Image (cartoon, rainbow, N blue to C red):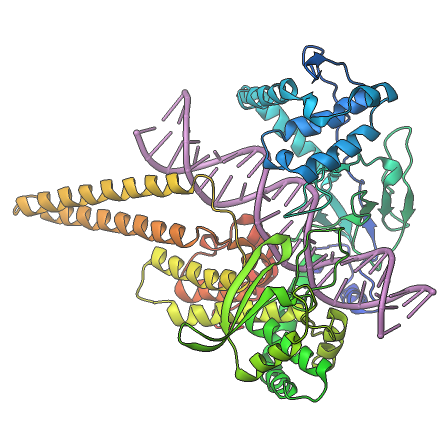
Length: 569
DNA sequence: TGTATAACTTAGAACCACGGGC
DNA sequence: GCCCGTGGTTCTAAGTTATACA
């Protein structure tokens, strides 16, 4: 295990503990023996506006109570954002804002459209400008203070090892920003107090102290879970957690395990495919539906698709929750037979649009599933994620729908790298190949991003640089030609150097263009077995730093320790 | 068998600091 | 030395899965 290093670095642990530790790690859900931390960092208290920053209602100045003012500032801070123009957002905000008003305010303020937050908004903009314009020394002071807080609250001790905590700061109050068409956007996310907080730590640790004059909701000692702090959030009523950083042993080990499960799937995926193809012919509808859904999950890397409570969240779907309206069947399209056109909103309301030729049997089954149904009916009415996952569990230990995404992502990277890396290429060209392989995965997983606001301009700038470099190259070549006798060698070198620089720029331009609407980070961080990339680096002499930045190297420390140049997923 | 809940992973956007180019 | 763009970091929402319970 690559995680033994963290054990052996503990000088006080006797050797025999090594075994004990390993045993306990993996049995009956125990996650740790010892856990000590300092608790969360709370959001700073509300700092009231200076009296010259005014709020106007119906054109008239109105002094708000501190509570109502605070909520108003949340809206004011978002004034430039599209959110504040949306009806749902405004309605939810207004409703929750009223709850924070005094009865006098409530009776005066009866229409959000008559509220003028512009002075507040200007004030916050000025504040942020002022922050930018601060002296070096003042900025340094803030940095030092942040570092002090990080050192005090940002680490914990888990089983004798100091580990970085991920989100040790409690989420500050504000207005809820849901993604897509979220029915709750604009609602007030309330301030979290010590009385809301459940602390989890070991009995024999030094328990974190609540701020003076306050109490925790509860202190518990549950070593079957990994979280340090939790609270219940007021928008969906779900629980939020403070957990460890990805660099921690507990996260790394889990990550490793995830990829090992995906590699086990590799060994039996052909058997499973044969099985679901066979099930397309089943006389039972539920089996056919299960088999077609699994085919989509496997072929298209769709998410499982749990049911969601209507009206509580944005209307998004995954495989099992697909509705008839999300598919269009084309007997024939662009010279291909049996094309399925998918168009639906997935996680984070990201659109999935794809036209896929499928096997005749799948097509016929889809026609059957869609027969006599309304557009808003479930495509797989005899299936849900629980049924699907129970079936998968029977096919392979630890197999669930999401393992297919991990497996298909990683195997795609591996195949693409094997296929397109050219050992003759220089380092930037090899990295372009890597990014293209990464991109193939991101496309498979539908990882999209909004094109950066500065995209057009930055492409233009790059083109300008390329043009200038071309001219420089032409000059250098001319000079080389002219100087038949003098310093020929050094001029040849100059030409070569410029050619290399030009190529680097052109590669950069290609890479950026191809990346316009595709996000590589998510697959890199969550789906691609890092050992594939590390082995590739070793094999082709690419420094790992070119592929993984510092944070990523910390997260993947286990893989860097482990992977040899011949590792194959 | 269905439903609620808890725990944990995955996700894109916003924010911020830093370094390269002028 | 300054400005601007970018990559890295932070933030927290939105998924999946397991499990408890009716």
